[in-house]
Length: 369
Ligand SMILES: Cc1cc2nc3c(=O)[nH]c(=O)nc-3n(C[C@H](O)[C@H](O)[C@H](O)COP(=O)(O)O)c2cc1C
Image 1 (cartoon, helix red, strand yellow):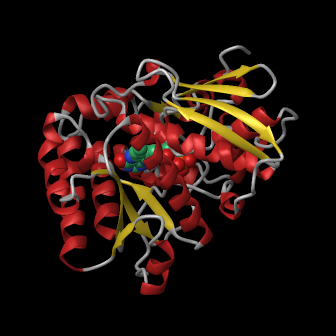
Image 2 (cartoon, rainbow, N blue to C red):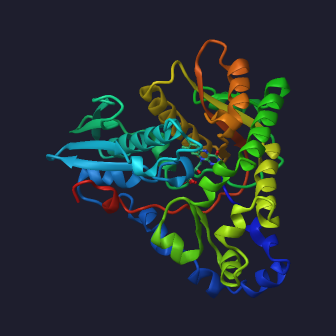
Image 3 (cartoon, rainbow, N blue to C red):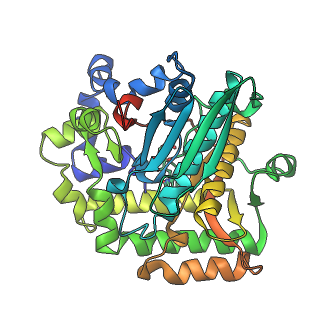
């Protein structure tokens, strides 16, 4: 879920006044959470080839921006990657499937960044089963082939807002075919749109699921800088509302609050506005399959960046808790008759590039720092 920054305006009936008051460029600039965004500028500034690669990997898309990765540097060329179970999302991701997909995105960016410097990465995935590390990696000098998609790593985003009206033409669809299945019309698109939309509303009206997101809200610059993860609700306007006591975690917890209603509607409208949908499927649903889905997803996201497109995961219809089970079943009945697992559902189209999202610096994610 992503809370549109503008949408919370209606929390205060006087939003227009506050927005005007906050329009000073100087004030706006001072409210940018520079600390939380610093890892974007630190990417690629490390001597050690492993830190170099990890400093890019942490820019990976991942559920609720939890950043569940931990890296252990071993000897001079080894990295062991773990998924931090403290960062689980027990309500909306009870089996850690989506968080594991996020680890796959991380692994693929790490591999690409290493290749950029000529390093190959030899990996063993899930070497000790589900309770052990996600991957044991060895960096091998001279063994890496640069990947042209890596060029787009700094501009890659998950889209957050409405899509432009521009449709996705068949030539573009063809260019994306090897990255994901694309649905830009007909009954299949209609079904995906309706299912994604209804599943989103079902999630929003499930108190425990909604609360899991609200607990991860970071309101304003100092909260975002202190915890550069989760759902960042920053910017001058929201901060002014928060300062005035009009935008609080308590208010946002109540889905009938006008601001919450507006945020829910904004995501519903974003789903309805998407000109196309993407599906990422894997033959099974093992941890290895989930990691592979993440690798495919981030490659798709880099390719859409190259094409100047906007892509956003919309996951509610694939989640594994009771309130959305019917949507997951529907998607699988329609799109996975061969017994495969649908791992990612995406909204695809065009739109303005969103801001960078916060990240924890690599130094804070190292086991033996
Ligand atoms: C497995 C997975 C599931 C996600 N599900 C959603 C979702 O349902 N809705 C959404 O808006 N974003 C979703 N995201 C995107 C994340 O919120 C986003 O990657 C994160 O906030 C970081 O932002 P960035 O990708 O722009 O760097 C998902 C990402 C992953 C990897």
